[in-house]
Length: 214
Length: 286
Image 1 (cartoon, rainbow over the protein chains, first blue to last red):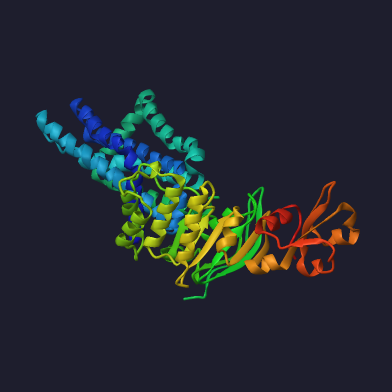
Image 2 (spheres, rainbow over the protein chains, first blue to last red):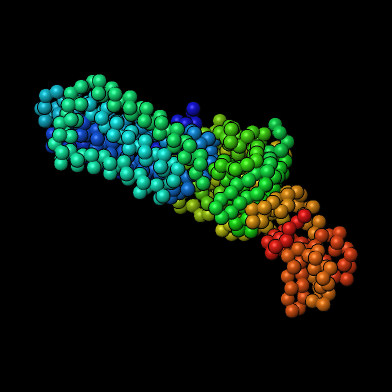
């Protein structure tokens, strides 16, 4: 297990050249907070940015042939995959924490009431979006690599964008979502459980794809 | 620990355009084995299978007595690998490379790593991307030596190195196996390097195992036979591996015992290069 965490740590070293991406997160969080966006929107933004960073991780892996490095280390394929899932999730949690802290501070600065409103909602829903996209992206990249997999991995992004656009055309869809959200904590709990289950299933698929990769 | 540090038994791997067939060889403890063959012979595929970078279709691979698939993580504690180019991120400094890699090894010695850097004139602050090929190779060796690897696997480490750097590498390999407790598998197509350091040779051609055994046996077992065109009888040509005919004569590889029957001909001990060339021309070492 320790080598799985070492793999996650190795991912953060690999992302060294992407440090600038991390600075974009607070900048965007400040911008959205100033426009009065709720924490859920900040959470979605964080998830979106982290998904881009994670894509870059596979791009760097392919650019430098890091498969060779992984094959030379005291690691099996399962640990490589699990380590990547852990680093991906930590990246998201870190980004979410940053945007929440900024969101709350900005709320105080702007004198808004209930600055922590929507934290649970923002976390569970952005986690759901993040895991749904990651759960499709990660097995694709593990199975096909960055160059071959990048077109396919756009599909979950496009589906989410399409879903958001659909809401503009069909007002009923928006009201259905609003109705679902009125269930409050139970819907957040369900979305959290779905996120965890989806990631676990995705992990096993990714291990299978990675082992079969030529 | 086992006396054979590396064992491949009937290993097979098929791709759409290439098949590595029934590869079996063993590397005993304390020796250097050269894995040779022309480009596309299957050397890198064999190494990728040993490292479990590729899934084999058939056969068994044990490294230091451990199964290469089931005990992959455990066995790699004791393996050092040198690729033809560095497998690290260019933006890493050497010090960061150590920080990223050392946690994977239980026996990592920071002091040994620093000593190796000093010996190789590498600064910890230098970025990996700024290193020359020779320096990259030294960094990979420093990493392998710092976790006290028992088996060193080198995949074409000398390609692109100048003669001085190649000479240095060969010296280091000889020094590495000096205690008799370590082994080296050295894939290369620059066979002059091997003639200096290798005890065993495994030769591949078109995905097939052509020869595995001691280098001495390989070179003693065959002769390069040469003669004028009129001296090439139909009977002799049957014995010659990779026969090459020109207007001024012929030459090819022949079994050393058979060569004794042809005393009037020029018959020399081959170099490994010559063996590879004649085999690649269509012959097969029975």
